[in-house]
Image (cartoon, helix red, strand yellow):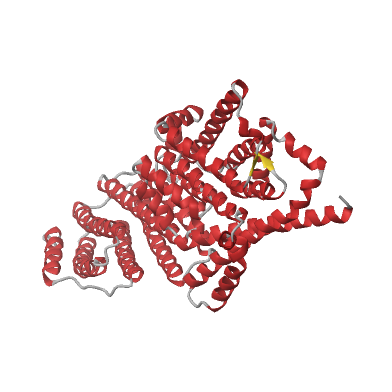
Length: 581
């Protein structure tokens, strides 16, 4: 070949490869974005039974790349949304689902009658591309523009495939190239080529697509294609492995499930296949295969893998636990990590928002637990901070830090206005919980200073604080519970609480003034008492703010409590303060 021909071949091959990978990624990314959090949410719901997880993983990988499915599954395991055992079916299904791309690309090899020629993507792709571009230009809604983007992405992918096939066609008359391709018949070399190609372009579907393009232009035998396809399936494991490096051990085990399945399946197949060939000989190995043959083999090995390894899923789980054993320290170190705030979910804002709500609910539980421990401390009139109170305070600080950092990263993602508004309101609720925790810490420190000075509350003051603290404790518990369940009636309930508490607080303050005037309480005691009561008021204010955030997120009008509810709540708190005058 002349220098000009070589240059044209290289530029044509690179151009086709660039179009192919770009079109595939655009189509996959847009499908993933359209589905939003429903993809991850569906995995969560459908993995209770392994066969259901397998079916879902297969269907999902048909529409998006298998790497998207596997990485998403690794993220869900890392976040403890699903278990390692539940991930097995999804991982196996994802490998099978990705074979659909090879079948789609094999349509380019159709020929003969006019009808079959019309079915070739190269025949209808130009018209599809024009239609997609027009649809993309004139569509007004985001959903319709996404559909146009998917159509254009598919068209670009098929044009790239056709470009690669045409570019390499002159190589069929080059003896040196034919000799190089023949060397790939060596199973070890063929597997290495498949792995290297997949690692280079980060897509097993693209690697197999290149092989199909060569098969349609220069001729590829089964002995060349089989080890390359097996190698491509091994190379695709790198994406999940790399994604798991920054994860906890649960995420790493899920990635190892994907790796071990592909390694064992392909190794067993190659050993058995070439052992049979050595004993009796397999006649079709030297025969040329086309794009359809490569797609058929790719599907066959994954179907066989599904049939064998779905029943052996527990074996894979035990294997990865042996490779990466579980230890007690692992659970202890990750106890205060909000694992559902996974960076992988940031590309799906709707699902990430659900995770933020879940994590902020856990923050609410932590704040409530912190307040309960604080009440126990002042109820026992302790002069030193118990370890439990300190640990709970540090826990809430870690939760707040993780949530704020995640919300900041999520706010930098592209999302619809409604999602952005929800994020803003969730961030407001997180800040309210953070203010509660800060107020509890401040009240705790003031009380400890007060006790270290050798003074304490009078019996009457301690009793009033206990009653007031009990009321705030109940309001906080109601708020946290209703925040988790997203109860829009919370705002009306909190309104009643505030009205009753305001009345009761007036009585408490009057009693405190009388105690000070009568010399029952010291000025320092009255000051600390007043600061604690002010802190309690602030916590109730934050509860009210959280209730209104729930209303705004749901975009529902405030529903006032019925008279019966009002009377019941008022009676409850009046019973608590019945001794106050």
